[in-house]
Structure formats: C-alpha cells, structure tokens
Image (spheres, rainbow, N blue to C red):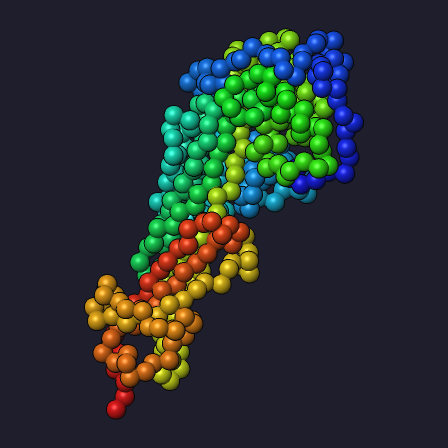
Length: 344
C-alpha cells in the first residue's frame, strides 16, 4: 500500500464533492458536515476488519491474510472485540519465560499475555481512539544469568470515517480523502496507518469507493456518533539489538576479545543487524564502576600493554537500530573477570 501508484484519477470538481461523485447531494469544499464524537461509545468497541500491520516482520500484514501462499508471519486473529496474537514463534518457550505485556495507556487499550499449557498469546482489548505503545517483556533463559528483553510496537486506533485522525468525523475527513485520491501519482508516501484510516469501505484499498462510503455514511447515519466501528493498525517500533552472554576472553597471545550473542527482536535476519561500535576501558574495581576510557581503542579486540597491568579491562558494546537512526542506542559493559597480569 505504501509508495506511488501508476494510475492517476482525473481531477474531481472542487465545487461539490458529492455532486462530482454522482451522489446527488451538494456539499461545497468550504461547507461542513455535522461533527461526530469519535470517542468510545461503550466499554468495548467493534473492531473493523481488516486489522493491518505496518512493518512488524514476524506478524502477518493483515488479519484477512488467509491464503497460505501469502502467509509470512503470525496471524492476527480478531474475535469478540479482541485481537489475539500467538507469541510462540516470536518469543519461544524454550528460550524465553515470564512473558508480560503492558499498554502505555490502559484507557485506550488494555493488553496482557494469556498463558495456556505453556502457549503464550497476546490479547489486545481496544476501548477508544488513540495510540498506545505495547511493550512485550520476557526473560531470556539461554544465559548463565537470565536477562530481560523487551520488544515494543504501537497500536493505532481511530473511529471508522475519521480519516485525518483529529478525533472528529466531518467534512475535513472528506477533504483529506479527496486530496489523497486526486494525487495518486505525486502524493507523498502514506503509511499503512494513514491508508488504513482512509479505507472507509474496508476493502483493504483506498479508492473512489471510499469517498462514496464516507459520504453515504452521513446520508444514512451509519457513520458518526452512532457507529461503534474502529480501525486498528499495528506499527513497528525499532529497538536496538541486545548483547547477551557477553564475556572477555584471551583471543591469542596478549590479545583480549569479546564473545557475545547479538539478538535483534525486530529483525528476521541476523545479516541485517548493524555492526556494533566498541570502546575499551580500564578499571580498578571489579564492577567496572570507576572505568576510564583507553584512548583510540575502539576495535572489537584489544592488545594488552604494560599500562593495562593490575587493571580490569572493560569493553563497551553499543548497538544501533537496523532501520531507524533516531532509535536510542543500547550500551552494554562487559567486565573482565580478573585483573590483567602480564608474564615476567
């Protein structure tokens, strides 16, 4: 859905969107439709299918992605006003334990992990329009000391027909959709989140039919305050990779190197993980708390010198997001188990 399309729609007359679409009702661009509260109606809302996924590699693109030849990830199941996502392949039980899930705003949507017979399922219950961050947290058990790993992604919720996500359903939404349709070649790149909101008729593709659906919804009072249908889109949040099981080892004579496991919960291929950056330190305390950087030592390996004697060596490993330079880097400090003692 993202990117440019080859076809271009003919310009639609500005003076009347409804008349131009053959709906027989005049509505000037500057006119207004009655504003409808885009907030929640009841304690739970109706989830309008399809529920889409924007960029989460281990999850299916759509809740309606049922053709086995196109299935590339875990299904998005929508049942009883809930979304259910199986976590057994993403955070496997033979590698992870104590799975939990947290919502950044429980008034918008509640999330939790349901565990039945060692199978973990993420359950999402949406309540109203808004955006939340979902944090999955687990203990990585394939380690001498279990380490906590988190995976973040977002859920965007909007009232059906609220194309521009301003919390209202009015003529501004029709104008936004009109702009999109009139500029199908030269328009900016729209995200899946935006395009899912524009899919008013819910056929998984923003087209002229969505304008008809939006404006007919007003005429027939099937959109607006009396409608409890909401559009959901999951979206990737980039996390920097984890450095796990790190330890310093004698790589060769007078050379110290690090051994660790690099894991990126966002990437589906280790080859796409950015190369970490390094900085070596010296410390007198076995915890490494008083460490001082060794100038110029920024490689993965360190050649021991006389200045290292009677110090603990510490290596700082900094990992970076695979796809988003704005993501906060993750820093891990690996401390040598013994002070450096050079042979006489």
